[in-house]
Amino acid sequence: MSLTSLYLLFPLILTIGFGSSSEEHDALPLNYLKCARGHHRLKLLSSLTCTSERAHGAIGVLSKIILTWTADFVVYLGDVITANNIAIGNASLYWEEAISPTRARGIPWATVFGNHDDAPFEWPLEWFSAAGIPHTHCTLPNSSVSGEEECSFRGTRRIELLKNEIKQNNLSYSRNGPKDLWPSISNFVLQVSSSQDPDSAVALLYFLDSGGGSYPEVISSSQAEWFNRKSQELNPSSRVPEIIFWHIPSKAYKKVAPKLGIHKPCVGSINKEGVATQEAEMGIMKLLVKRPSVKAVFVGHNHGLDWCCPYEKLWLCFARHTGYGGYGNWARGARILEITQQPFSLKSWIRMEDGQLHSEVVLSS
Image (tube, rainbow, N blue to C red; front, side):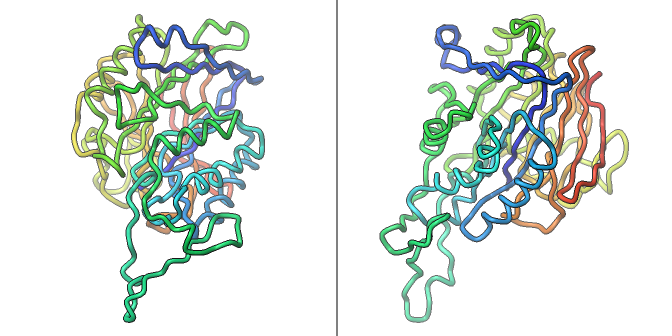
């Protein structure tokens, strides 16, 4: 259902952690992103779902939001493209178009996968005319060239999409996660550190692949174990606040979902559909609720939801549908997160495409 993009505005350093084991992680060099402000803002843009028909609308709203709010970091949090509607052999061409506004402004970013990014091509019934001749002309993005030789219908695998992004863009902080978590790919950690003390973490941002598309919609027990191992390695005392991002809501979201409207303690503006959850719970939520350092989980997927609700001692939040692909005609927008370093606080609100701000909530203070 969705994608999401995230912007971090802050005077600090981002450090990426990944690897198939703690030994491999320790051997890898760390990438640093130095920023220059005191408040740290993250912007979540959900559901660009770019296709040949909807790319320009998605890019337009993304460009408008980026231009209006200066960003230091962007995270695309699933459904960057709608692969099931893309017939060309290399869907990375649309992926590159989706991240182009961020790249054009020199803003670093990271991506995680959604259920549409590598979904199998869905043959439209109308292509099979009375004459029995399906449509075979495939137009490339930003190209006037079209023809049968460009059609593929095979889809582009997660690993291919991410490898191309990393290879083509030195501003990308995305990473192929540990190989033993396959078929999930986008599992990695960003460490946010003070510019005055790079060794001192302000927050840890965990990104997980919640599946869908080419394999079941689930965060596996192996991913849960990876999170447990990595969080114990990086934050054994739970002193550093931790913020979690993936695409498809866990079943816990359905437990806290508002029934009619949105009422306190939940905060938001639209509650227009039921929560479409992962297929099963494999242990990740049990681990999260046991860690006092975990402050909030952010997802996309549902276009008609943008609320935050408390669950145990943390918050479960939706982003706001951003792009013009996918279902629904609700107004587009973005969820903003603001991290304050001293003393630590995490605040969030929604910014609409027209500039309106609403649904402010303090998630940790």
